Length: 480
Image 1 (cartoon, rainbow, N blue to C red):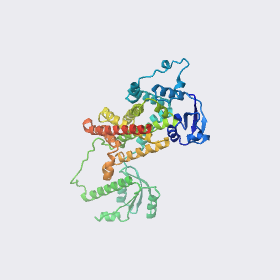
Image 2: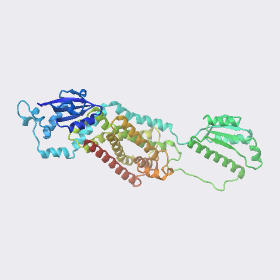
Image 3: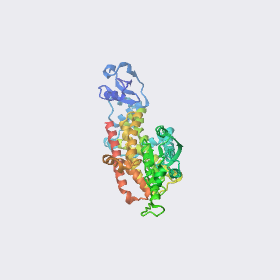
Image 4: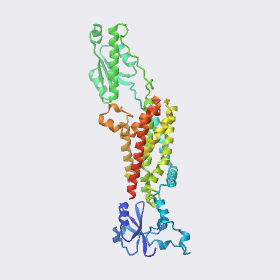
């Protein structure tokens, strides 16, 4: 427009410069693209009056985006007066080119909820996912790789503990006792030592986690009816291994004592335990239903936590500000494609759980999928909320990991919630992952249905709604 000029301002903090320029008299337009601010200012406005160093201000030619912004503002009747003359075509028939809609209609477009605008944002996000092959690859392939790595590598049953033996007795009784240790599948004999110092050194060096010392008078005391002692040295640096070693060694010693005391007579009391749902105590049956939930959470949070940050870094966020899309429409539009993607990944992992790891599903899978949908929506809302907080992708990654790690350790996925201190038990039930893992194990292992898991569905739905509303509210504040 006559009497104006366009400039490009490159600054370290472009968002702050943008906010200052919008409050500056003589500045008609100011838009952000990447690290640069493009402004339409009065021709007589000096660089010093803009409040930025003169070497940061360079002339800029009008771009197609400037035309789009100017046309949009003129159409809505809220652009600066200097913009409107430049919009008139040579035919001098502005009504034929830019028909002015009624004010009431424009207001409805700006404030009303539109499913069409939600669909447009969802389509835009779908196209970005399809075109960004690396994101699509990592989001679909990496969770499957992690499933196989963790599913085959992690075993909750402690077996084959490396063990060294210092047998001073060297008798038939001591060899029989050692056979009971090695036949239990809990202890693997990795070597024999011939001194106390060598026994201690084997454990300190990490070559063995358990050391057995049988004293030279072991058989004499046993034959005399006295208490024959056995020294069991256990490496306590690994708590689960130490607990298993102590429990199994005590059980073997108790069994040997009963054999000598009863002398062939039957036990007065016998227990016959029956393990329900997982009779073989397979680690995969217990571990993978929780891993299914964790992998979907990581995928949902990681993908959406970069969504708005990516728009900001690429300079397209300011363009979204100029469209009629409302914050709630933008958030819902960004949730839709990732909801389809994460749900598909959930089903693929569940299929691999049944086929590759032979984990049976005792309940109805559709019940699990119905409970998983609000959980996935909540995790997508959490990722978008993180994306409104972070300004860079590195920051969004750190915030995402800050939510995933506590979810893993407080949800009962690794450690039982009942064994935690009381305050952490309360915190655990504030984590959506806790309710989803309980539902996953309930459907897959125990065959639970809607009647048993309706509380999980209600709680997850409430948490999901809260997280989505928080992301909408946070994004609205950033628009203000």
